[in-house]
Amino acid sequence: MLPDQLKPLAAVRQSTRIPNRFRCRAEIIDHRPSFLEDFCRPFCSMCNESCPPRPEPRCPSCNLELDRNAQYIYMFSVLLDDGRDQLEVVLHGPDAEAFLDIPACNLYKDVTQRERLRMKLLGLVGTRIECQVESYRAFHEAKRFRLIA
Figure 1 (cartoon, rainbow, N blue to C red):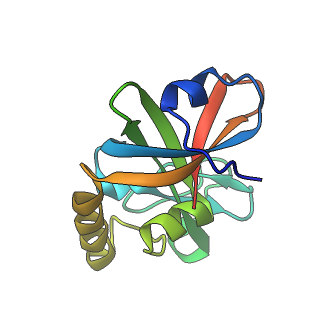
Figure 2 (cartoon, rainbow, N blue to C red):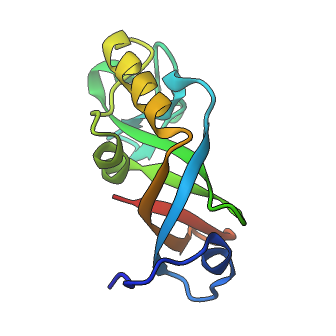
């Protein structure tokens, strides 16, 4: 259950409970990767893993040509700033699609969707948003944060 109270990013970062959800209000000040073409990655259904974005993608594990056989997924991050602290949060899969309201695709080839994404990001960067942030741990890595749509 999501708390009613807005939390500062410092409190989100310092929370020791994982997973945990927070409501925050912050400005989006940057995004990664820098190149819009790299926001979506092909997902190989044969190997069950995402692959590096490329103009003519092939799965590095099974060498399958991915343009015909792949579903594309968003995988990017934004840097949030609440005026006192900053926090990098990941947007991935359906949450990223819902947040952007743009379907994932091969952004190297789909110029129309890439332009829609560029315009959407121009409107988001520098904008203060209210959002849900969840802390999580991927495998044995350090604590991470994701934006939940």
